[in-house]
Image (cartoon, rainbow, N blue to C red):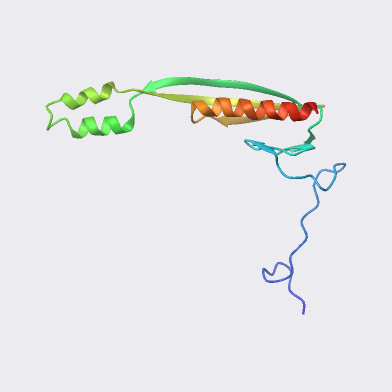
Length: 143
C-alpha cells in the first residue's frame, strides 16, 4: 500500500540533512542555549548559520538600569481606599519596588563570522545567569 506525500498516517519521513556543508551530520544534543544561540559539543548554532565551537570568542555587555516605581497593586488599593479611609490609603503610594530594565548583548565570534544576541532582562537574576552560561561556554570553547 502506498501513501500520498505528506500523509500524517503514512511512513515517517527521514530527518533533513544539515544545511551547513563541511560539518558532520551528527551534531549532538544542545548543551547550552543562550537566547537564540544554541551550543552543542562541536558547534554554535545561530539563526544565520553554524559556527565551530573550538576557538570561538564570547563577549557579554550588559546595558541595564534599575528603576524604583510604585507597584500596580499599591496604586489600585490606594485608589479604592481613598473614600473609606479619608486619604490615609494614599500612603500606599510611598511603597516602591526595584525593576530592572534593559538588555544584555552576547557576542560570539568565530573566524570572520560574528553574531550578537540581544536578551531582554526581566529580573536581576537574569544578569548573573547569562554570565554563568557564557563562562561555561567559554570553558567549552577552550577545550
